[in-house]
Length: 392
Image 1: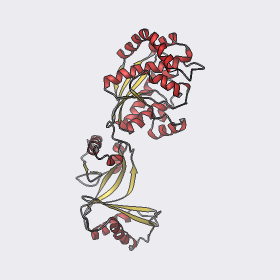
Image 2 (image 1 turned 90 degrees about the vertical axis):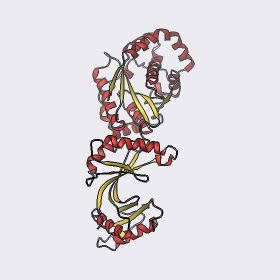
Image 3 (image 1 turned 60 degrees about the horizontal axis):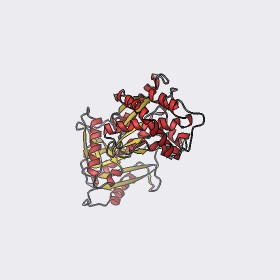
Image 4 (image 1 turned 90 degrees about the horizontal axis):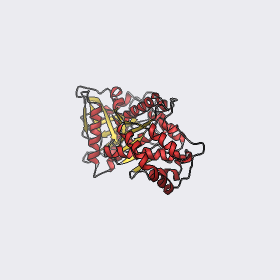
């Protein structure tokens, strides 16, 4: 009987379609997996469109290692497989039946799906499935074949070696973190901005967080809340740099200088001015916000345009077309929801007018800002100078 061992086959998604840059993305994923498993004596290799994780000493402990790698962006499925070095169909029939017997309890119907990467193999994929399916059907298990809606599916892959698996755990998908650029995330304590950061990171954007802190109007618990949100995002990113910007003096200056109906727009423009300066320092390519169109007065199309003109950088808004419940659902999925519901306000809730302007004219906003900018700039510069940096 040929020897088998438990391994983990890892699949990746759309990067397989990127012919020119495929190797670049694969190396990023390999590095991420190896980094997360660096203190284990495991082998991580690429095998014809898959990553193979195995223990040179024996079976891998999938339950122990999966929590450490399942949140890596770019990975789509984790297959709890057995590996054998044999590719002879008679041996594969016997091994498949032995493996299948351990997983089919309580099942009545089955099918076999096969893939072969070696096109010189004497049998086609359908013929491999038929041969192994016949072995299972003729056994004492009493299962019948259902090719359309089976209770259980046995997957067979013939690559450099042969693999059987049934269970497949879904990964995060997306693109490898950091492969599409770098962005500065304006992170607050609400539901929206952490989700915007997650969705951007899922598309390969390395995120740097910036939080605008306004003591004594908000407590230190508000800052702790944001730190915990950033820390929760490291589950997906590995590490994050968080800038904490003292914003009180900027807010007070604008409160005393701007009509209340326009104040929110100018506060957001001030944030973008500061975020842009930090983006230049970090060689970042964009800003990221949690705005959702129409959610509040400052998030109308006209308001967003009036805010955006404060920066020459692209402003990504991953949540722009999502409603609040959709955002909350994602927050629950990624683990930020319990932190976001803590009852500590951030600076975005301060000095909000009862009836804020919701259709500002961008040219008018720019003209007003030009008239006060010479006085505003020292406050912006001071906030930047006193910014605290935290590595999470």
